[in-house]
Each structure stands twice: as C-alpha cells, then as structure tokens.
Image 1 (cartoon, rainbow, N blue to C red):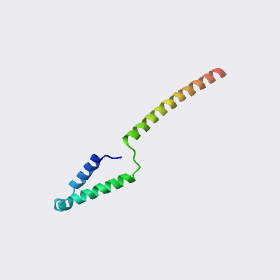
Image 2: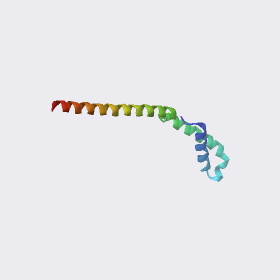
Image 3: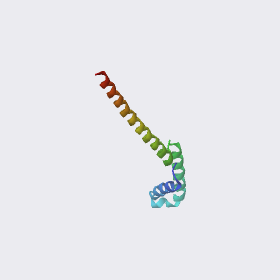
Image 4: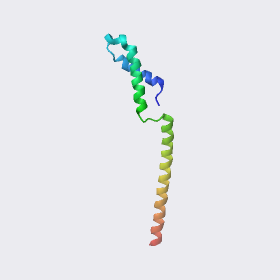
Length: 85
C-alpha cells in the first residue's frame, strides 16, 4: 500500500505544522498522526504500484487486440460490400 518512508514523511510534515508552543506534545501528536494516516489509508481502496502496472499492461494488450479486431471487421465489411456490387 504505502511504504513506511512515505508515511514518516507525511507525519514529519504534519508535525512541522504544529506551533512551537505545543512542541512538548509533538512526539505524541506525531504518533497520533501516524496512526490516523495508517487507519485512513487502510480504509481506502488502493492498489500497489505492481498491481497497477500489471493491470495497465493487461489493458494495453486488450486495447491492441480490440484495435486489430476492429481493423479486421472493417476489412471484412469492405470485402462484403465489394462482393455485393
């Protein structure tokens, strides 16, 4: 889903937004941010990059096959029209 480095980076950015006077609870907030982010991301219907890439490849191959079939149908229709005249 999302790697630990990205989650840590998001947490760090959120922690940087905390006003300086509240920095004494910064580590607690950072932990809470991390937990909230993990929980929220778990609820999303996300796929990994590998899963996405596989599906993209399948879609591209399917598109190529559809285009080839469309060309073949057009060719057969043309032959059919030529045969009728």
